[in-house]
Image (cartoon, rainbow, N blue to C red):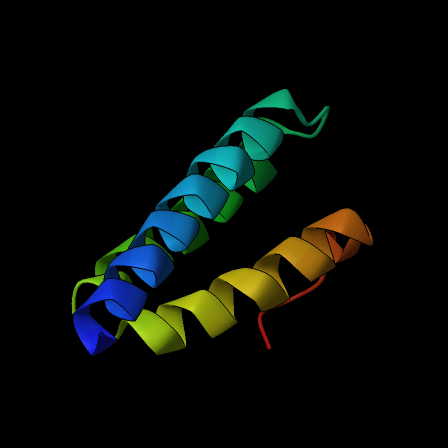
Length: 76
């Protein structure tokens, strides 16, 4: 049963990462900002390989910040 929930979380994180990458590509921002956001997504992707739950939390925070336009602020 736990394996099924882990697979569901993996699928959800993968879908959210794909959506986040699409959103970042569509932003009308300077290339440097886009590159920084893409790097953050790549870090989250790498983290998912080691700690899926943490990556899901980090991706949720990233998405909220992105949706609220806080992508130009410094790292937290």
